[in-house]
Image (tube, rainbow, N blue to C red; front, side, top):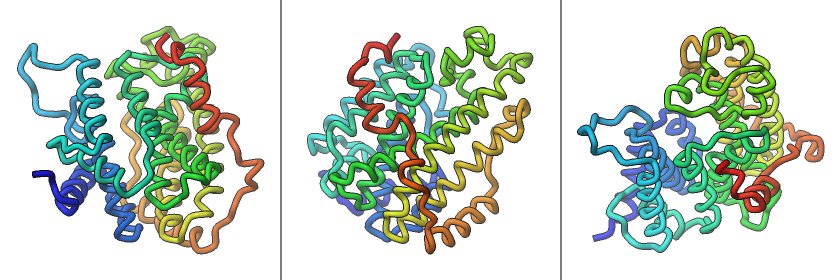
Amino acid sequence: MPATRSALVRSAHRSIRKGSKSFAAASRLFDRATRERVWLLYAWCRACDDIADEQDHGRAAAPVRLGTRLAPQDRLATIRTLTELAMAGESTGTPAFDALAQLRREVPITDALVEDVLAGFALDADDWRPRSEADMLRYCYHVAGAVGVMMALVMGVSPEDQDTLDRACDLGIAFQLANIVRDVWEDDANGRCYLPVEWLAEADIPPGEVTKPHYRGALVPMVAQACALAREYEDSARVGAARLQFRQRWAVLSAAGIYSEIAREVERLGAHAWDHRVQISGWHKLGHVWTALAEARSPRVPDPETSRPVLSRRELAALAQAHPARLHD
């Protein structure tokens, strides 16, 4: 029998508590209906990530027998098959994917938006690397910006409010840029690099040597450049956050504060940013929650025209559609 909504919500809640204490805590700032839908969305995203990276809630999964690991394209096929069943409203027998089916019965998440997220997993399965800054931002759109749009719809933003959806996408892009600069060493260990090839070439860093100790100093200006981009996207997102209901605005501003601190800390540490993985303490996170509360009560709205990145959701989606082959060069 298909799982009931309450069972899917309980399973999704367990997933977010196991996979991200920060997101689990931030979700409590929402009203109940929004909170449960956030859990359902998280469960699907987390499951896709785990299948793609052969992990368990972002951590190393149990060892598998030699010769039984799936190839990246096979893992992508699993994600796509389960997601397509969920999009068709059919039971998958997997709570995280059934959670997506349930969410789509409650929230106007389009097939195209789901496909945009899947495109990010396809890029990783193809061992893709961004050549330019625009390529890097397109990747950020697929893996985080499109999820930001889904989150906005979950929070009740109208599908017709294109500008606010753009701003929600911009917050996801800002988050992903923070992840990229923080995880340079971790990504390299997994055979990945999301800094643009053009940036690396300008810094005279040969392919595959980004984590060599003698290149750390050359990475610092790149980090500053990526962090400056993240601030531009965060400023844009704050314009959209001011349009949300109070509790949604509080949650979004809390998350924005936490992720912006990650980027700032990486930038502050310079060449020592990768001595250990930058993390934000629980007390600092709580501080951002309280700061966000004050901001949510009296939002300071940046000028909408001066707080708009050159490449946002619609521009990045158009680039991906116009030059799909370049994503796989």
